[in-house]
Amino acid sequence: SQQGEEDPQALSIQEGENATMNCSYKTSINNLQWYRQNSGRGLVHLILIRSNEREKHSGRLRVTLDTSKKSSSLLITASRAADTASYFCAPRGTNAGKSTFGDGTTLTVKP
Amino acid sequence: GAGVSQSPSNKVTEKGKDVELRCDPISGHTALYWYRQSLGQGLEFLIYFQGNSAPDKSGLPSDRFSAERTGGSVSTLTIQRTQQEDSAVYLCASSSQQGAHETQYFGPGTRLLVL
Image (cartoon, rainbow over all chains, first blue to last red; front, side):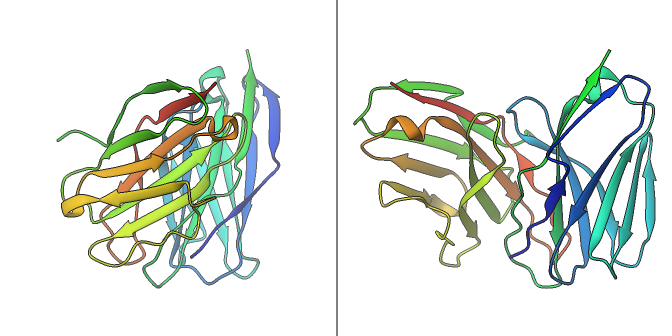
């Protein structure tokens, strides 16, 4: 199985600022996914980056991947109060098998 | 069709009672996960079903916890003799396991409170 570790545990910023969250993992991956969770509800898939990609964009989200360092980062630009949530990464290896989650990064965006 | 659904959405029970939590995955999804999340904490993996394979029960915290998945679809998580520390949100997720490109789709969770 694969599990990512998110850093920092908590992040608090002002609306309009950028938020950067990091993910580290230990095994070789085929892709890495980021999920978001609002206030104890289910997680929602945000973006997937493949191992042969270094950067990917989706709206205000920018994800980078450094397979040599086994790390990824999620950048949210021009943050909004509605971005307040917990963010989780999920590395996926080449073998099918369960993918679990770490403790996430809790982002608070102050209006 | 519909996403993952869970029932009940909220459950309040007394210590020592048994509870059953239900998960209806997305039709056709072969993989199903149960997680537990205590207030302000991350997700704790409980159990994983994949097709007809034996479930991965490595995350179940004690023998009071069990889960079934009948007919490869609906799953029930049972907690026997509930304790106050069992209070948490129980999340179910399903996926169409296609090699490494798995995306988990989560239900809204069941909020369990043991008094």
